[in-house]
Length: 113
Image (cartoon, rainbow, N blue to C red; front, side, top):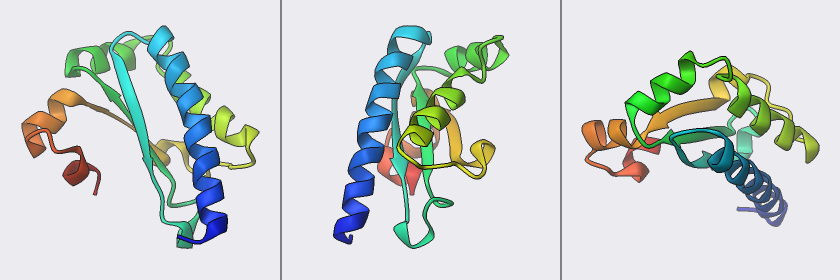
């Protein structure tokens, strides 16, 4: 990773950490988030995965009137540091601990790759 890429990655981490803290307080069932990125194809390769504790809580969030809140928080926070998501729908994914356990035996590294 180039020095400039590391600097951008650190900014992304800081920005998403703030989003995570807000989401933990505001969204029932939200647990954590992470990101992946290939800096050779940045920002299109940036992907944020938001994890809920169960499929039930995830489904409840998706059915709520607030279902776009998390994506808006992420997009706005990244925009504040100069990163525009070109396809929010494709670059922000909602998942659950339950799905990872079911399909990847709880191995998030394998699930995210």
